[in-house]
Length: 160
Image (cartoon, rainbow, N blue to C red):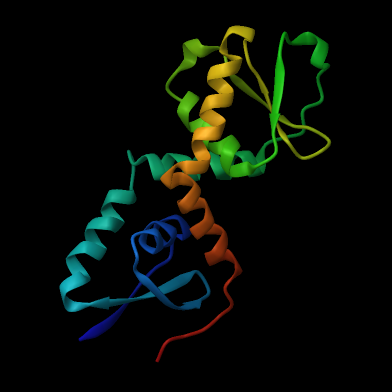
């Protein structure tokens, strides 16, 4: 028998969607999923798996932080090497990977006038920075980000 279950956190919903749970409706913040009797335990396990210290939770937190970040207004001449990323998901991925690596010297400075996310990157870390940025494209975080964006775009619909 198919049941309806819902979550009210967009990150949790995206995590469920990327694990093949079928979205069947949305009302306000509630996103409804179809869930068979045999899938209830997996559904609940995935909800718990998403919570901290999950990397997907951290990635989502980085996305939210980047949306709130101020414009970068300092002179670029003050910094040795500045790089910009224009994809918010890619920038969040780099930020997440740098989160526990304070010794790398990579810092997020803000948004530039082109809405890119500006990072100061030590010259000796430039290749590593670029490699990490491109790893995002083939990572499950890219899939998660796509699920987040898809869920934001769906209209209201209440399942019966």
